Image (cartoon, rainbow over all chains, first blue to last red; front, top):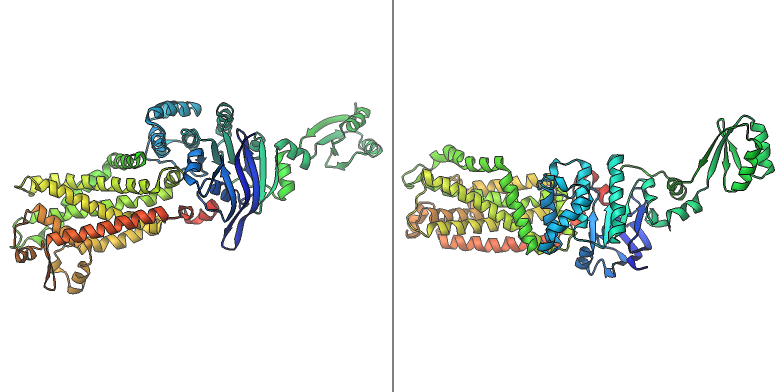
Amino acid sequence: MNKIIEVKNFTKKYGDFIAVNDISFEVEEGTIFAFLGPNGAGKSTTINTLCTIFEKTSGRLLIDGKDVSSQKNEVRAAIGVVFQDSTLDTKMTIEENLIMHCAFYHVPRKEIEKRIQFVLELVGLIGERKKLVGALSGGMKRRVEIARGLIHYPKVLFLDEPTTGLDPQTRSHIWDYIIKLQKERNMTIFLTTHYMEEAEICNKIAIMDGGVIVAHDTPYSLKTKFTRDMADVTTKKGLELEDLFIRYNLEYKKMDGYYRIDAKNTSALLHVLSFQKNDISDIEIKKGTLNDVFLKITGKEIREES
Amino acid sequence: MDTIFALWKRGLKTFVRNKLALIISLIFPFLTIYVFGAIFTNEMIENPVAYMLSGIIITTVFESSLNLAATTVDDMVSGFMKEVLVSPAKRVAVAVGQLLSAVTVSTVQGVLIFVVGMFIGIRFTLWVTPIYVLAAMICVGLVFSGVGLFLATVVRSGQTFQIVKTVIMMPLTFLSGAYIPLSMLPNALRNVAYFNPMTYATAFFRMIVLEKSDLSHMELVKKGLAIDINGFIVTPMMSFGILLVSGVLFLTLSTRSFIHTDFSRMNRRASDASDLWG
């Protein structure tokens, strides 16, 4: 697969403070890549450097083979950016915002109308195109920004916390658009998010903490590597069950009214439970989540606001 | 080119959409004439309304071009400038677009007041006068949109900017001879006024509007159309030269400063700037 983003030994310092310390990673074309990390981990610094806003201190950052610091304009033409905070002109209509964007990105004039139709249909705002941006709700504004970020057909779309502060329904809609895009246009999507369940959809995840990448893999392998499935079992005959656990060498913990068992060895667990067919009143299998991965790696809960 | 045009159109649209500001900017000059009118009623000035109005028109062009170019600060605060700066649009084009839209809007405002003024006292006999008037407005607009953009790139924070703007605009406005004749100013202030480009812009513009280009130097000085600095007479043409020089200076300064500004450190809301850029 073609590497669309390549970062090698990237370091960024602010005076003495090292915000990003010698990180390297690659993103393959046509995938969704998520950047996770607690606040101050260096996510925004990295994304802003990739978007040509910040200057690197050292290292090599390439987007589509072009150098982020020496070929700024080529890189800028190849990317679309949706910032965390709105960068729309609220005094203009949706349509006017899109037209201006096309001018900045040198979209051929004949194409503009067709593209406006396309992106506004994608985010479901075609009927709203003459409305002033200032009059739109937060979710609609975000959709306009995504539409605007796409209208010049970028190779990579950067989304800095695209769903922060939106209601669950809008969030799921925005994810539908993102996935649709990735599939239809084979676009690479690079995003940061605070919502762990959203990161599950991504092809690859990098977790940053304290300026370094502490884990980098698919959501599935991260979960297998860092979490275990657990089974919560409630039974009438607790002591008998404990005996069985010991006999079959299953790790368990006595909780408040139920037992939490390590479900790594599924067949042994099933075997044990079959002895108590008539006594068990409740079983709940708990899959490891990315949140568990995150906690395990960084030692802190991800904070939702920014 | 597309970028310049897009930003220019944006400036015009914003101007046209803000009806209230448009109406106030039209009414305000005439209110000022009513308030300050008495000062200019003396035997040296035959047409006080036209005399005052010409000063006020050029002041309006000056204030509005400076203000409009300075809205670049608002664009930084609202985030719109970020959208422009991550695009492949050239920074020079962005600066020129902002400057041209400020010049255009302020000139349109000046022309509107001029047209209304023709009903209450401005008369001209030469057909070239309106062309000169327009050219002079554009010049003044260019000079001070340059100043405005320069300030915007230097100050960058929304709240500080309001104060800086007032501190700069007040003396430029009141020490220019537009509202108060220079001869009525205390000596110290008059010396300050000699360093004010607006002093020359006002004198020059008045001469055009009042069609007094054929008067002798002494007469021009008497009428306040030429400036007498301790015996050295700055003729309207020299005034125009001074204006041009300061214009070139500020346009270059502002464009350069805009191109080299590191917008990555822009101060949005002071409290969470570190969150945003951390």
